[in-house]
Image 1 (cartoon, helix red, strand yellow):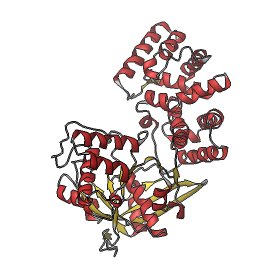
Image 2 (cartoon, helix red, strand yellow):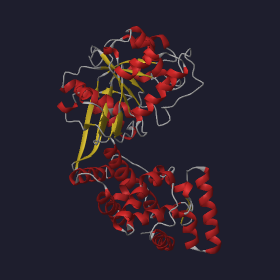
Image 3 (spheres, one colour):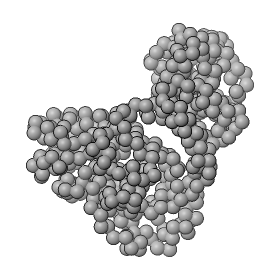
Image 4 (cartoon, helix red, strand yellow):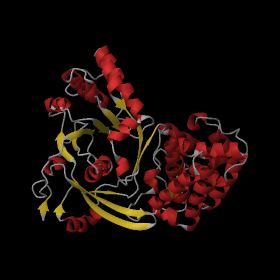
Length: 475
């Protein structure tokens, strides 16, 4: 069987490189590169991608050896039906490691074709670091590397209007475009790069806030021989992804016209306000995930798929979504219901084994941002407590007892959260006073961002739910 590269695939790199991409991991390859490839095939976009290694470790050796080629295996449920698709991605044409090829990295800024800059450097990747120096080759942080690249471009093209770029960060932080621009501005001030460069950056460059959504499990090692037989190549960069995908971009119509996604079937949305889409994802997808974890795990269920297919837990999750979350979201009903049903399809995906205990990482902060707002808005709107969201809260508190029957639960959270719950449950073990336990937990405003003990009807409902949970460890 042939090793995959451009010679064996008879695919020479001929497209102009219009995109500089910081990061070549599974997500970007199965998300943005897959979308760019689709644009190339369906429209006249005709764009190649240069991938930049954002960190020092590693060299993207396999990506270099395969000349940027790799396959996407899409497996899952789409509109209630199982699908499996294999696609060769051809758009990545060059790889640059700035720690080893600094001059080459800066020279890429001299290309007149580059217009878009995409990044996914993890949630901690967009930050300013005073240890970065302008003379570093390269600076430590991604925004520092980007600032150096943009400055070199500005100098090379003498600040021309058509040399500006569109930044499309995919990091999972709120207002990621604004955050990236703020860091670049700090570097400009810190390195004293001048007002003319600052003016060009502000007028001719665009930092777009974006929201990305796709589950990408990565290399499908359990079925890789089957995949090789189907694609006809040995491809060590095969990446598996679910069918569902959404890319929401907060940008002007001018930028939208440069990215002709409207000519494809891809779920890419341009908007002037990202917040409703962010709310939809956080409240429904992330909220249901977080609420499901303690309830399912305490019921001796191990994975998301098992939980959603379990008669009791599955019904519980659906009631949370359709009866307690959707009614409080100020969005069109058909949009909410379509998204909710897509989420349930994603939870049922038989090809993704998402362990509840893995999702449980930092569950207190996740509950605070993903579930608690829905619970509080529901109480405010209807003047009554939502039974299922309260059950999820009670289960979370029981989960942090660290016990599932005789088994220890491998809790992973901040030291503060773990210490707090350990002490609270130790006192409960002595007193068996659930009311006191609930008062202690709900009053911890540092944990929840607000003192919950005085919320109308909440503490009594949580006490009842905890006593039921402690007695049976089931719903």
